[in-house]
Image (cartoon, rainbow, N blue to C red; front, side, top):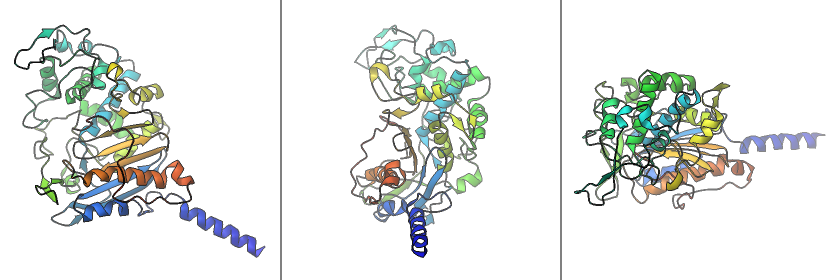
Length: 410
């Protein structure tokens, strides 16, 4: 009898030791895989989070938010998530689709009349444009999936992307010729998702940023997601870096695409890439999507809308892009210009959030995201939980094989 009690006690201790650790119980399993990159000056610092559809499993910080000041990275650090704003914008528009106020197969000009009469430039010579009528006006689904023919941005979006009101920027796109016949090809386009944001404003009757706040951020509890980080949030904002000239270290840089000060209301929202956020806030958004559009029993988006957004909608282009998400059927994901990335792995039922502030990577740095994703999957994924032999992944791991969105950055 005593022997059986000891066996049960040993089994219980073994189960506890091998079970995934939850938020508030640091696993210290992810940071050690990334620390060598900090030591080799390929990475300033990062916040990484792993969740399943129900809860956060782990969140860890490694390295520095400010290298020169030796300020350690904190788990609640703020980051410019850049083009990770795109799936958030697409999901916001799909809320209006659910309400019957927008149809993704409608022409954009139905909601934004300034797009009537837009032409296609079929000339290969940029000095001699040749304009023809489009085979059809650009559709809502095409601006959501980068198949509209719109260019990346307009000339007015310089030197930064946030200088003009959204309506003015979108009107400038309507005056530009399309680069190809709508639906025939794919070109990654900030303009397309900005158009989606403008449709939200026109149809809902409120500003784009107000719609996000009321229909997504408040219902999901995303209290640290904003276009204008306040003074307190800026104390948590990780500094930005790029590889130095000699490729043996890092150089601090500002966010060149944005106007400073960041809290200034002289800056305007960018649906395609203007948001700041935290790892926890992004996990809330992805948990809602992983749960088929529900969060804590509240439906934010229909299951049908989730399936549309996270399945390939690129048609002839075959570019593995849905509505605001890169997707290969097994995962849906998006990255940002300064190295951030979030994804949901359907096979392993695992959300990973990777937040850094790096404008470009050294060859060593390119291994960091795959290392994190493989380590997270090995430890917390379904196969990892069932695998009694722990998998150690070091800095020489091969790149991840799963799809990343083509040019999915700011």
